[in-house]
Every structure is written in structure tokens, then in C-alpha cells.
Image 1 (cartoon, rainbow, N blue to C red):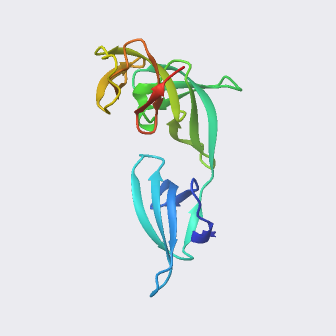
Image 2 (cartoon, helix red, strand yellow):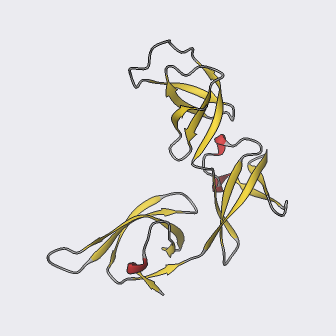
Image 3 (tube, one colour):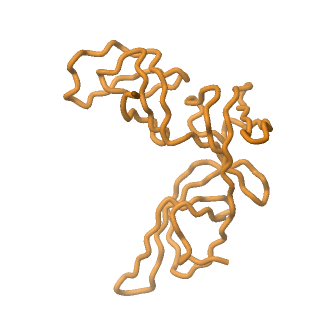
Length: 187
């Protein structure tokens, strides 16, 4: 059994009958009283983030997860079909296990996070950045780059994100999938 001394960012633990990954942690030794570890945990089953404080030396239950590369093939009703790239095995994943489901394109490379002991699919993650073409937005205004004003734009997957005023229809842009924000125009 591991203790809080073994905590590190990205570690997966069983906590409160759920699987969490450690987003951040901080070991605190106050001048008075016992030491403790303040953590920020993200659930791999429902995406909820919570903050928890463990006493120093508290036992934690580490769980092993596997990240496998898959390719998105198509949407079938409310489910998504993926293919493992080495074996060409196809699996169907329900929508609730997919983050940003409106940002998937046919042929998109993704990582599926699987709990090793039970072979349970926990989540499907896009790469941190994707490049997509803007299919609709209001026309841009030439020279209007001084302000940080954003306008709505629809990309080729159907997702709507906020982009700067100078981005036009047909431009290819880089999008941060973690917070669905515009990064830059793609070269």
C-alpha cells in the first residue's frame, strides 16, 4: 500500500469508490500541528474535480491504468466507434465516457484510458491540440487585432468555439481541446 509520500501529478488512485487522477498536490507542514497533503483530484469516470486533504502518511490505493491509441471511425446513434491501430479491433464507447464529443472528426487520433484490472473504459481523450477548418463565422475586419474581442465560430466537426475578430470562414485554426479555446491560425 502506498502513502501520501508517493503522490505525484498524473498518479491514479482509488478514492471514495471512484478512480481519480492527481491534478496537483502540495505537502504542507504548518508551524503548529501535524503535516498534511492538499490535493486536487479529477474523476476519470465523470470528470468532476474535487479538492481533498490527506494527513501526512495516509495510505492511498494506487490503481493502474493503460492509455491505448485508437482512431475515431464514426458515430452510431449515441455511441462512438473506435479502432485500435495495431490490431484493427473495433470498440463502441458510450457518449458519457467521451470528453468534448462535438470535436471529433472521422480518422481522429485519440487515447482511450482503460483500468488495467477490470478492462473498464474510463475516458476517451483528444490530443491537447487539434487543427480544424472554420466552416462558419461572421466576416473578419481587416486590421482589427488590437483588442481581445472574440466572436463565435463553427468548425468542421460542428463544435462552436470563440475566435478573434480577424479569423475568417475557411481559415484553419489550432484549438486547445482542454478548454476549447483558440490558440493560433494553423500554418
